[in-house]
Length: 368
Image (tube, rainbow, N blue to C red):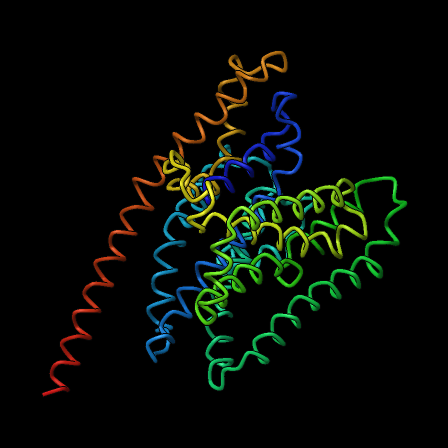
């Protein structure tokens, strides 16, 4: 599913060079980010909730350490290239560096002038999620109850719907008749990028984690219906895609995002079911492994391709363009992964093992 997400996003950013046969995939490729959000909600939610099954609480220090080693080294490496190698930038304008370092680029971006590295908006959403979810779980799990969890889920879902509706009605609708790109630019800044308007996918992923952790009987029933989950998820996603045929309409803004997230969550659940073929699909290890490095670099690599490999690229050879863009993106992602991402992941594991051994030693001494 992680491989599917990145392979769905990339054609969206390469859509200017895509063969006509892939235009449908490219047009909807932005939805791959929502799939990433669902996956993140499920995986991070499961990681934080699992300790409660044995009567423990998640270690906030350990969690934040692991997230930092996972996310920050590759991000800082790419950000450094943006700062010291201007030709690396896919657009001339770059936001102030402090917005990237504080992960508020998605909240303060001037999209008309500063589009370089703008795709980091989704990483900002993820970072805010990593910061808030553990604290929210600690609060809710002090006196856990089904009613409290359900109320929190419904409140977050309705919050996103109401906020998007208000922003659209009061801030964007007056711009609909503008002759320039003002509406589109403001839509990206006010609706598409901010964390508080894009919680749907993360929420649906956490819902899956909650069911798996605290309602094992429900989860077993779901896992026994893998193809039903898949068919239902595809049907709901198809409906969401139909609603998003006008991506910037009021209806797509208000109900399109939660509908898409529900459909994607059902597909993710089906991929976990041993009854569904998705759980047995193989051959996607490479894009799944390189997904984060691909996410960070593919737009910049496409820009460099058109700068320095322009003899290979032509509007008359879209399939050649497709192959060149994907091949060079994978090569660059491989360099970033093996030189930065994997070494820090291995360091993270060594630190985790060391901390675990030290904690076991302290526990043994205390027992004596």
